[in-house]
Image (cartoon, rainbow, N blue to C red):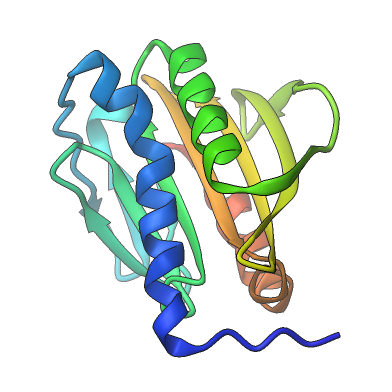
Length: 178
């Protein structure tokens, strides 16, 4: 089955990702002021967090006023939000609360998993849900670089599947910066 999303619906997905990252920050009332910088044409670093990544072609990146770094592709139908806070359990719970408020038929793929990613401690959870009749895939990942970095990936299933190779390359590129 093919799902066609009207262009006017795309901003909904951008707002959804923003909303999912807000509950924790608003409740705590902290602003972190993280900033990403370019260290090569497609390589971005977040020096204060000790993290770098390669930005895939066609993706957009912005530093948000609340200190988050927000990546989007496919006109916002899929996005990745970096949140920087040492109280990552609170951030994760805030994100899960946002998911539960915004998605219907939310499903978790199982318990959180712990491993390492490029030498960093890594904790991950993922699942699916429905938003206005469209299947959404989400994941919440925590990496321990210089700081804890919580990463929310959120997007339309069809869009994420279409970009699975570049998303995999992006994930592989996440590493500690020098």
